[in-house]
Length: 102
Image 1: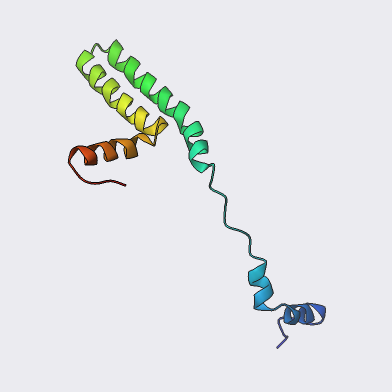
Image 2: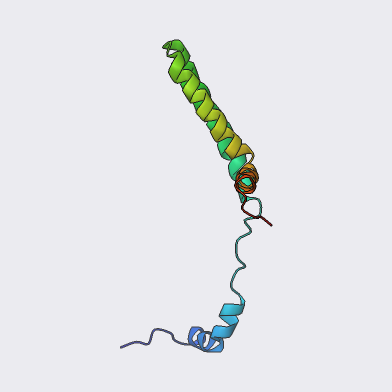
């Protein structure tokens, strides 16, 4: 039976220690701009879908569904484009209920 490593490859494998391999591990991914990138990618897509559905409701003359859809789309758009608003609203509701906030 032939050995798996022979010659120079076997000598190089013995020279590598696990500590060196762990020290050379790549750094963790940088996700600092991920939210902005996702917002920039899905934002226009969201607007296109909202526009198509709104035009469909207008052409089929379903004004009530159109109004409901636009109101829902506005709320989703606000949460999507201004993500800090959720924290502000939650803090305001907590203060109105008398819960102490930091």
